[in-house]
Amino acid sequence: MDRKISIGNQSGTPRYQAWIDPGWTIGLWSAAIVLFTINLGVLPLRDWDEGIVAQIAREIANAPFESLTWLHPRDLNGAPYLNKPPLVHWLIALCYRIWGVSEWTTRLPGALLTATSVPLLYGIGREVFFQRSTAVFAALVYLTSLPVVRQGRLAMLDGAILCFFLAMMFCLLRSRRDLRWGLGVGLGFSCLCLTKGILGILLAAIALVFITWDTPRLLRSGYLWAGFGLGCVPVALWNGAQVYRYGEAFLATHFFDQSLKRVSDSVEDNQGLITYYVWEVLKNGVPWVVFLPIAFRHAWENRTLSWARLALVWSGIYFAVISLMQTKLPWYAMPLYPAFALVVGAQLQRFWQPVSSEPPMIKRVRVWVSVFLVLAIVAWAGAIYYTFWVRSQPDVQLVFATLALTLTVTAVLMARQDVQFVVVLIWGTFLTLLVLMMSNYWIWELQEAFPAKPVAQMIQEATAKGQTIYTSYPYFRPSLNFYSERSIVPASSEALLKRWREDAHPYLLLDPASLKKLPQKQIQFLGMSEEWALVSRAPAVKTINTAKRKK
Image 1 (tube, one colour):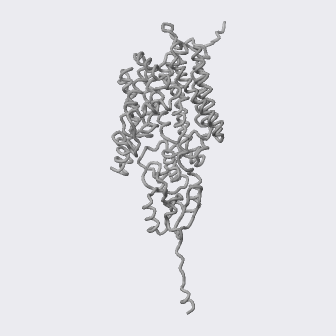
Image 2: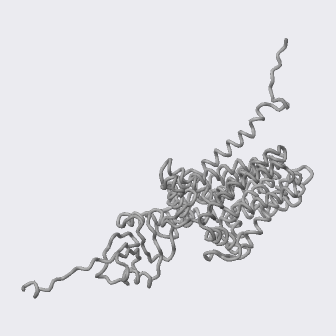
C-alpha cells in the first residue's frame, strides 16, 4: 500500500505558505518592540501628560487594594482625579508594583501597546487588500511614522488608543468572514472608553459608518451587538461608580470640561486655525506625506473597494472632527496615521508592481524627485551644521546624516526609475528613527525648561513629604511634582511676597531675580541649584538688652 506524503495543508496550499502571515506578524512585532522600547527609560518624564499619568499611577500602586484608590484615583494632594479613565494608569501601576517606579516602567505599557498596533495594522491590511505585499507596505509605513513612534513611546494615552482602535477594526473586518469575531469588537470598544472616555464613541461611530457603507449585513449580526453590549458593561460600571461617589462634579469635569468643552472652547489656550492639523501632518509626516495626495486620489478612484472605503471614512470623519474642535494639540492627530499608512501602502504597491493597463507610475515622479532632493539638502545641511558648528551633539549629527543619505539614495533611485527606492526609503527611515530613539534628543521638549530631576532632589532633601512649595516659575510642571513628591505651585511676585509675610513657614522655589525681591536678612537657604534657590524665612533671633543683663 502506497503512503501518500502530504506536502501542504488540506486546501492544497504548500505548508510553508501557512507560516508566511505568522512570520510577518512576528517580524513586524519584533521590529516594533525594538524601535519602541530601546533607550526607553534614559530620559526624564515630560510635561504635561507624562508627569500627570505617572503621579496617578504611583498613587494607585502605593495605596492598598481595599482603599479603592484604583477605582477612584487621586492625585498627589489627595484630590479626586476625574480627568481620564484609569486603564493605562492601572497598567503602569502594575509595572510599578513588579519592577518599581522609574521612567522605564512608566513608559513600558504604552510602548508595548503601540508596538502591538503594528502587527494589528498588518492584520487589517490582510483583510482589505488583495495582495500580502500591500499589507506589508502599509504596516512598514505605519512603523516608520515619526509621530507614532515618538508619541507611542511616551507615558501617554494615545499609543494605547491606537492599539485598541486597531484591535476593534481588525475584529470588525474579520467578522465579515466569521461573525463570532464581532464579540471582539466590544472588547476593543470597552478598552477605548476606559482609556479616553468619549473618544471611544467617536471611533466606534467611524467603524459603524464604514460597515454601513461596506458590509451593511453586519449591522444585523447578533454577535456584533452582543459584543458592543458586553463592552459597555465595564464602561457603565466604572462611570456609575464615579457618579455614585462624586455626583455632578464627575459629570462636569470628566464629560464637559475634559471632553465636550474641548470642542467649543480652547482649553488652556491650546488653539489654532482650522488648518492646524494639515501643517502638523506636513511637518511630522516626512517622508510618507510626499505620497499622500496621489495616494488619496488613488483611494477615491477605488472607493468601491473595502480598503479605500475604510481609509476614506476613517481619515475623513476623524480629520473633520479634530479640525473643527477649538482645542488643538499635536497628539490629537495620532489616529489619522494608521489610515494614512493604508493609502500610502496601496500607493507603494503600485510602484512595486504596476498594473499592466496603466503606464508605470515611476515615470511620473519628477516632482517627488525634486522634493526628496530638497529634503536631502536640508538634512545634509543639518548634518554639516552639527558636525562643524555644534560639535557637542554627535547624536543629532548622526540622525541628520542617516536621514540625508536615505533621502539622497531614494531620489537617485526614483530618478533612475528603480522601484528599489521603496525598500531603501523604508529601511533608511527605520534606521533614522532607531538612531533618533537611541539618542538623548527624541524628547526635544525637555530642552524648553530647566531639568526637573536635580531640582526635585534638592526639594526632597530639604522639605518634608507632602509639603507645598510656591515657585516663581510661571508654569505648572507635573514632572517636578512627580519627582519631588511635593506640590510645586506657580505664583506671581505679589503672591510670593504675601506667602513670605503671612505663612508661618514659607517654602519658596525662586529664580535669582525673584530672590532679590525678598528681605535679604530674613532668607534661610535650604538648597541651591544652577538656576533655582529653595528658601524659607529664617527664625527670628531674640536679643537681650545689655542694660537689663547687668541688673
